[in-house]
Length: 118
Image (cartoon, rainbow, N blue to C red; front, side, top):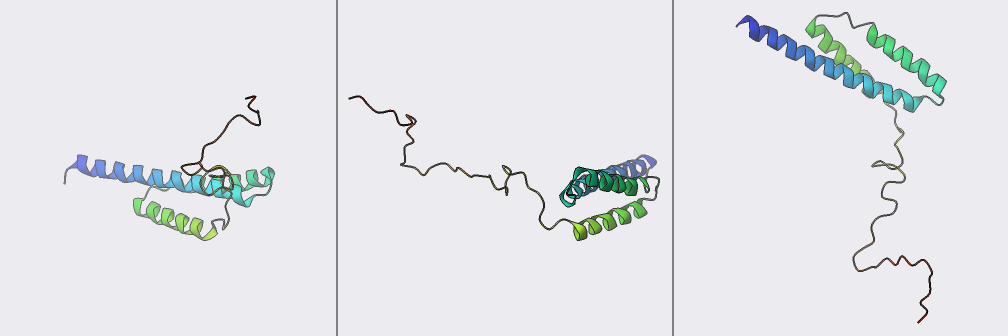
């Protein structure tokens, strides 16, 4: 095996790990907002979450990093909020498709009560 393929494989694996960590951090941070009732509680929880991620950024062993990411994803799945906040107009929100399009054959009249003088 050549040195360039080994280095390329290492760099590709590191890039994939960095992406998985980024996705895990963002998902955990957004879920922290679901658990916090007030912003000052969210800021404290977000700071604690960031410290947990920062504490392990010095780890260089690829297998250890993979294991830590898998443990973090499992812990996230375990503690994920059971009823997360959904933006009202997003899919699954309370306002999503509140006013659906009318069925075919029904005409919408936009005269708003103006009477014909005929």
